[in-house]
Length: 227
Image 1: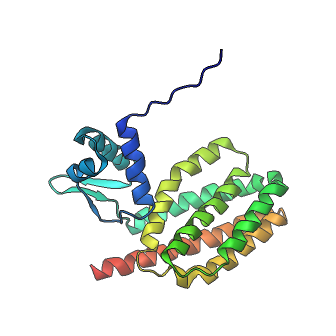
Image 2: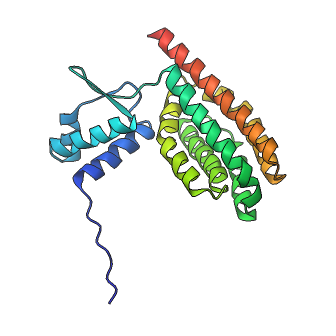
Image 3: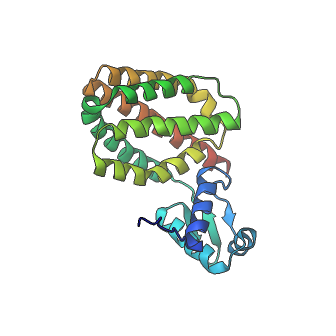
């Protein structure tokens, strides 16, 4: 007889998932202080699972635990942004080499649909959140098309850092101003994939990722100048 497997989750895992999603979905912003006792009360759990979850988030780089100061949502430096986007560029350009060979017609349709969705007007916070999700899915599909499992696993491990970077990029509300550039870049990426031209795709991805990196670093400089 086949029986279903019962999934029993630890409180720590559930708290971790909730806090991680709250950071990546901008409910907690970079620099916000996380009070463990208040979180435990709000979530209806003891202090222990919250502390364990916070330690996991610190290991992942999403929070900072400062001795005698408290726990804070991680803030990025110029170096953090540069290194994260350099790794992203390397991984996506590596994926491009085989993605153009293996990409299916169905994936091409999904990519084209996402490019179309990201060309729609975006004026509200909800629009921004939707746009970020579509953008992440667009790049994930390209990497997945490489059919390199270990490359995909490495890229997935970078996702949290990319998302926290986008939180910083949205903090001044400047993302709308950059959408026109991004749309042109996405169109060029799409055309390169449809042409199955690996060199052109790698060049388009490099230009797109470098521009995004430089824009985010400029945003961080403006933010730090106001502090």
